[in-house]
Length: 64
Image (cartoon, rainbow, N blue to C red; front, side, top):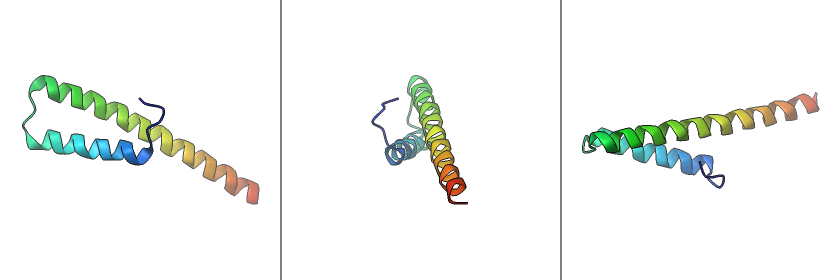
């Protein structure tokens, strides 16, 4: 995954993959590649959200 990728861009890519898969026009090889890419993007987004949650919790803890 590209280190420059933002959460917003990753979500846009996931939406596009979802549209591609839903269209039913992908062959088996394309479908497999899109599913692999989607899995990587989901993991990237999950890590981003966990990092933000940790930052927020740290900020909130520091304020108490």
